[in-house]
Amino acid sequence: KAKGYTTDSPLAGEEYTAGCMIICRCLRLLMQAMQETWKNGAPVLKPTQVRTRKDGQVIVKVMPTNAADRLLLMEISGEVWMQKNVTKENLKDTMAVYYKTVRSAKKLHKPRPTPPGDNTNTTGEDAQAAVTVTPVGRPE
Figure 1: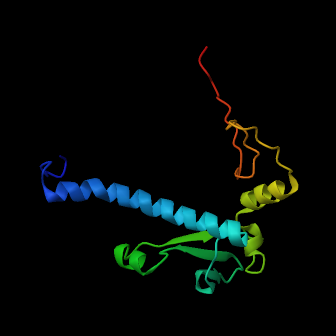
Figure 2: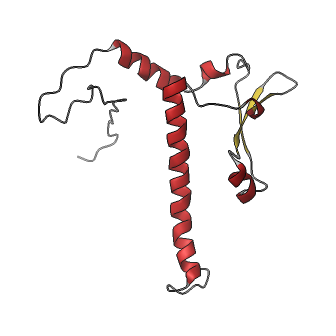
């Protein structure tokens, strides 16, 4: 309504799908990063994505990720400026540290067998990580 489109306008349909497409794209990129992390220990970076400033600080270009991004997001780019102690040589060691720890723990941990019909065991072979949520400020 804010843009003045009627609900049966083709432009209204475009507005409805735009948000969904962005979410799907973000999920696809997250899935790709997680698959690369699982397979290689960290997301895969092209040599052209990594540069070093004159003061030695490493910068990783994370966006645009492909030709479609470059066309759709013409003037937009994203970089991650690494901490001062990170070098090109140890960059991969500093990426996805949490997931490397979870994977190492899984290799060392002997999972308990899951009884038939029990879906509550988070330590079985299919579990990647268990998360515990503790409510804060729960009303009485």
